[in-house]
Image (cartoon, rainbow, N blue to C red; front, side, top):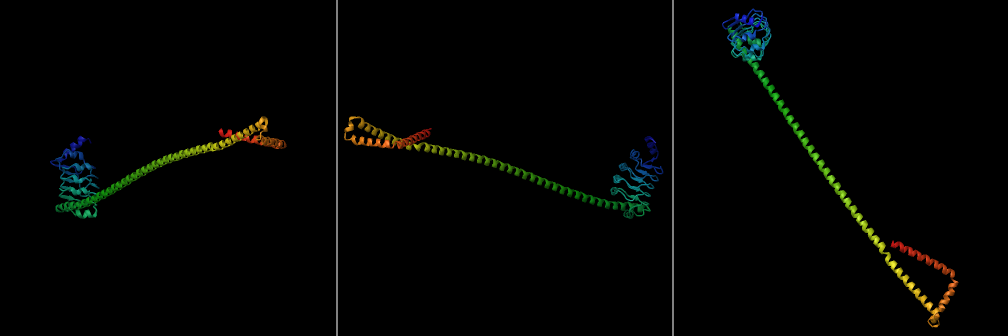
Length: 324
């Protein structure tokens, strides 16, 4: 069956503001077709095989009276409360056990029939028997009251859940802030430790440089002192022998002059006319005696001469070395 034929058939079933779709062997509600006729506020869907209402059914807010009796409904859509103008709802002889919480929002509902449904005990007690008009009106009032109490409980539960979620979120945020604070403190501490480490390294480097400079300074001072001591020692070494060389030279010169003088006197007394003088007589005698003794001591003299020559040679060598 095409969409046009459905619309045509639906037009055939409209009478004034009523749409009679009972006994049509329907398994679903033609929501789209009903939405095309907003003036049809009364819909009879009884005696069909409808098992559920589509969510779009809740958009038919123009409906005032709906008959869904003698179907196979096991549940109603969650947004049924959107049917704000619904006043009459017949759900007789279905398979409903509960009603959606939004049922409490059907504030215009004046008439309700829930007989022959396997309702849960509390809902069944609130619904009552609904055997006449009065009881069906009472059913609507009591069921709405019951569903409003459930709605309040759901709202309180939702509020508690929201509060718990908010509390958990606050705790989570507090933990997050605490963790961030700890991380910030840790980073701050790490920076401080790194700074302190760099400062210690800098101080250690400065101390090492200062120690090196101090050591270098000490080394230079030590070298300077050693140089001065060596220079002083050299001066002492070089200057100390001078008096000795001067004294020995003087003595040597005096001895040499004495010998020359004696030799001159002896020569004068022996080779000149002075040998007969009283002054030369003892000298000549002494020279004769010395020559005689020398002849006697020739070997000793030779040895003595050799010793004197060696001593003179060593003296000259030592003098030369000192000068170098």
